[in-house]
Length: 400
Image: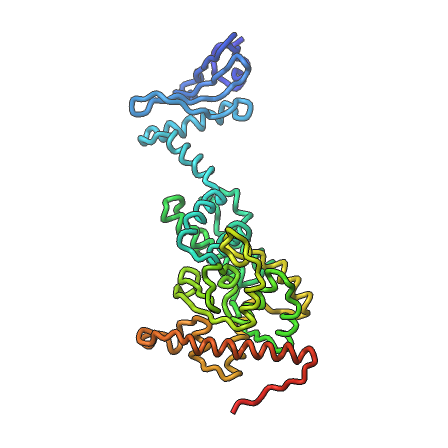
């Protein structure tokens, strides 16, 4: 039996020691031999290629791999690559560790860290959307090392999201992914944002859907005596955003008014929403759970929107509408009822029109009385159309 490691035939011909292990160094011809390469043979039977070297005065070694999977020629090639690194004063072990760390730094692990950090400065609704995008829409990327995600991968998944959820959802998911990678670059976790240069899913068409009185009646009557039903009716009566009502807290409700804090409003400004009698009745019907601050849902408010919305569509028979259309409908119909534009903007907490620019700096009025009158007028209209739908002989008096 051979005692020298010179050719591939020797790899499995070398005798294993009776106990422990023994290293057989490359003893091939000068032009083939690689200094430091050895075959480590253990008594238990394993045979592994190992590269021994010295860097900065310290003896080190790197395991190249199992001799059953890597032949002698491949092991020599790998060892030569390590020698080149050493010649350039680079420790090959450091580079290998960096690659291993990068491989273990998966998309899902870093995304979890990112969401934890952003939870401190994002609104509940924004955090929820970002969480949905990264955890659900970009799920196919979860096992990928963070730095291995390519532009092609992003573009491919964008097409899937657009097909399954629509252009708007795809574009929002793209924005969240880009923000995530920008943060990763800032943290030194990766060098490139793979979203850069990708196309959007398409041009977004602004929604103009305003629900008719008949549709409002059908939706109202189809709302069940449950959490989702109460939220939808409150959205209809108040014209507020979905997350502002869905994440409502008990300490934000007092004296017939909802006070949405700046941290939960889209424009970062605290907002008072006067409640009509109908809206107050809805909140009064909610059973308050001791120890729970959220009016609807659990800690962060109501989150399960899609399933009950589909059930509501089926029960009401109203198609092609989203909850945000209730906000647009409220604003449009209040204008029809004679509410002034600046009051409607105040109800919606819009910083535009009369409150934009210099005018907004000097006009600090909250229009509390006007907002209450406007929402009471709108609630009275809803009460009227509901009564008419039940057969009541009531007509609307024309405005003077």
